[in-house]
Image (cartoon, rainbow, N blue to C red; front, side):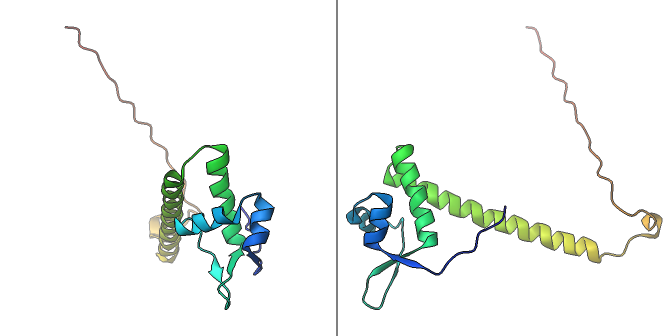
Length: 132
Protein backbone atom coordinates (compact mmCIF):
# COMPACT_ATOMS: atom_id res chain seq x y z
CA UNK A 1 0.00 0.00 0.00
CA UNK A 2 1.52 3.31 -1.01
CA UNK A 3 1.64 6.01 1.63
CA UNK A 4 0.70 9.50 0.67
CA UNK A 5 3.05 12.36 1.35
CA UNK A 6 2.32 14.05 4.69
CA UNK A 7 2.12 17.81 4.67
CA UNK A 8 3.60 19.90 7.45
CA UNK A 9 0.36 21.88 7.80
CA UNK A 10 -1.11 22.44 11.25
CA UNK A 11 -4.71 23.35 11.94
CA UNK A 12 -6.16 25.32 14.83
CA UNK A 13 -8.81 23.82 17.08
CA UNK A 14 -11.62 25.98 15.66
CA UNK A 15 -11.04 24.89 12.08
CA UNK A 16 -10.73 21.21 13.08
CA UNK A 17 -13.94 21.40 15.14
CA UNK A 18 -15.79 23.02 12.26
CA UNK A 19 -14.42 20.58 9.68
CA UNK A 20 -15.52 17.53 11.69
CA UNK A 21 -18.73 18.96 13.12
CA UNK A 22 -17.71 18.67 16.75
CA UNK A 23 -17.41 21.15 19.58
CA UNK A 24 -13.91 22.39 20.47
CA UNK A 25 -14.57 21.11 24.02
CA UNK A 26 -14.78 17.60 22.58
CA UNK A 27 -11.29 18.00 21.14
CA UNK A 28 -10.05 19.27 24.50
CA UNK A 29 -11.66 16.25 26.18
CA UNK A 30 -9.93 13.89 23.75
CA UNK A 31 -6.66 15.57 24.62
CA UNK A 32 -7.31 15.31 28.40
CA UNK A 33 -8.11 11.61 27.95
CA UNK A 34 -4.84 11.13 26.05
CA UNK A 35 -6.52 10.15 22.79
CA UNK A 36 -5.10 13.13 20.87
CA UNK A 37 -1.81 14.92 21.43
CA UNK A 38 -1.76 18.07 19.31
CA UNK A 39 1.39 20.14 19.30
CA UNK A 40 1.41 23.67 20.68
CA UNK A 41 2.47 26.96 19.17
CA UNK A 42 4.66 29.50 20.98
CA UNK A 43 1.43 31.12 22.16
CA UNK A 44 0.21 27.74 23.52
CA UNK A 45 -2.40 27.31 20.76
CA UNK A 46 -3.26 23.71 19.90
CA UNK A 47 -2.07 22.76 16.43
CA UNK A 48 -3.41 19.61 14.78
CA UNK A 49 -1.35 17.89 12.08
CA UNK A 50 -2.64 15.63 9.30
CA UNK A 51 -1.61 12.67 11.47
CA UNK A 52 -3.71 14.05 14.35
CA UNK A 53 -6.65 14.42 11.96
CA UNK A 54 -6.31 10.80 10.81
CA UNK A 55 -6.35 9.69 14.44
CA UNK A 56 -9.38 11.93 15.09
CA UNK A 57 -11.19 10.29 12.18
CA UNK A 58 -10.58 6.87 13.74
CA UNK A 59 -11.85 8.13 17.10
CA UNK A 60 -14.97 9.62 15.52
CA UNK A 61 -15.64 6.44 13.53
CA UNK A 62 -15.37 4.34 16.69
CA UNK A 63 -17.57 6.62 18.78
CA UNK A 64 -20.14 7.77 16.20
CA UNK A 65 -20.49 4.77 13.93
CA UNK A 66 -19.65 1.87 16.24
CA UNK A 67 -20.83 3.25 19.58
CA UNK A 68 -17.54 2.64 21.38
CA UNK A 69 -17.04 4.64 24.59
CA UNK A 70 -13.83 6.58 25.26
CA UNK A 71 -12.35 3.84 27.45
CA UNK A 72 -12.88 1.39 24.59
CA UNK A 73 -11.40 3.84 22.11
CA UNK A 74 -8.28 4.11 24.26
CA UNK A 75 -7.91 0.33 24.37
CA UNK A 76 -8.42 0.01 20.61
CA UNK A 77 -5.93 2.77 19.81
CA UNK A 78 -3.35 1.23 22.15
CA UNK A 79 -3.86 -2.19 20.55
CA UNK A 80 -3.50 -0.68 17.07
CA UNK A 81 -0.26 0.96 18.14
CA UNK A 82 1.08 -2.29 19.57
CA UNK A 83 0.07 -4.18 16.42
CA UNK A 84 1.87 -1.62 14.24
CA UNK A 85 5.00 -1.99 16.41
CA UNK A 86 4.79 -5.78 16.15
CA UNK A 87 4.32 -5.54 12.38
CA UNK A 88 7.44 -3.37 12.17
CA UNK A 89 9.38 -5.88 14.27
CA UNK A 90 8.27 -8.72 12.00
CA UNK A 91 9.27 -6.77 8.88
CA UNK A 92 12.66 -6.00 10.43
CA UNK A 93 13.13 -9.66 11.35
CA UNK A 94 12.23 -10.87 7.85
CA UNK A 95 14.47 -8.24 6.27
CA UNK A 96 17.39 -9.32 8.50
CA UNK A 97 16.71 -12.98 7.78
CA UNK A 98 16.64 -12.32 4.04
CA UNK A 99 19.92 -10.42 4.27
CA UNK A 100 21.51 -13.24 6.23
CA UNK A 101 20.30 -15.84 3.74
CA UNK A 102 21.48 -13.74 0.81
CA UNK A 103 24.95 -13.46 2.32
CA UNK A 104 25.36 -17.16 3.06
CA UNK A 105 27.49 -19.13 0.62
CA UNK A 106 25.55 -21.81 -1.23
CA UNK A 107 26.59 -25.41 -0.64
CA UNK A 108 28.20 -26.99 -3.72
CA UNK A 109 25.42 -29.55 -4.06
CA UNK A 110 22.84 -26.80 -4.63
CA UNK A 111 25.03 -24.30 -6.45
CA UNK A 112 23.34 -25.10 -9.75
CA UNK A 113 19.87 -24.43 -8.39
CA UNK A 114 18.84 -20.87 -9.19
CA UNK A 115 16.10 -20.55 -6.63
CA UNK A 116 14.63 -22.29 -3.69
CA UNK A 117 11.49 -24.32 -4.27
CA UNK A 118 9.02 -24.16 -1.39
CA UNK A 119 7.82 -27.49 -0.13
CA UNK A 120 4.38 -27.75 1.39
CA UNK A 121 3.60 -30.54 3.79
CA UNK A 122 0.14 -31.56 4.73
CA UNK A 123 -0.39 -33.20 8.07
CA UNK A 124 -3.53 -35.20 8.49
CA UNK A 125 -4.61 -35.91 12.00
CA UNK A 126 -7.03 -38.75 12.22
CA UNK A 127 -9.36 -38.77 15.16
CA UNK A 128 -11.37 -41.73 16.25
CA UNK A 129 -14.33 -41.79 18.51
CA UNK A 130 -14.53 -44.27 21.28
CA UNK A 131 -17.85 -45.79 21.81
CA UNK A 132 -18.59 -46.38 25.40
